[in-house]
Length: 55
Image 1 (cartoon, rainbow, N blue to C red):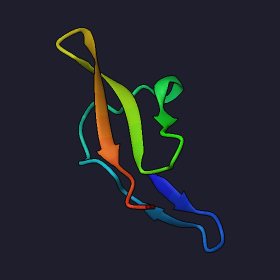
Image 2 (image 1 turned 45 degrees about the vertical axis):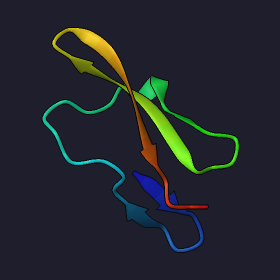
Image 3 (image 1 turned 180 degrees about the horizontal axis):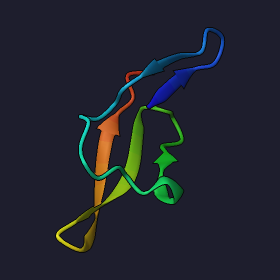
Image 4 (image 1 turned 90 degrees about the vertical axis):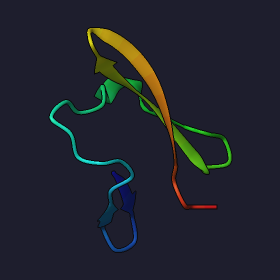
């Protein structure tokens, strides 16, 4: 989720799933255009990247 601080609006960046991303492994690129996160897939931690839509 991306939160627009001034208004508190939440924007979903990924599809809803039964297993959420690992909360301690979410990072944003230096230019804010991407977010990377880990998700457990078949007992393996996989890295995913999603565009934030900010830039």
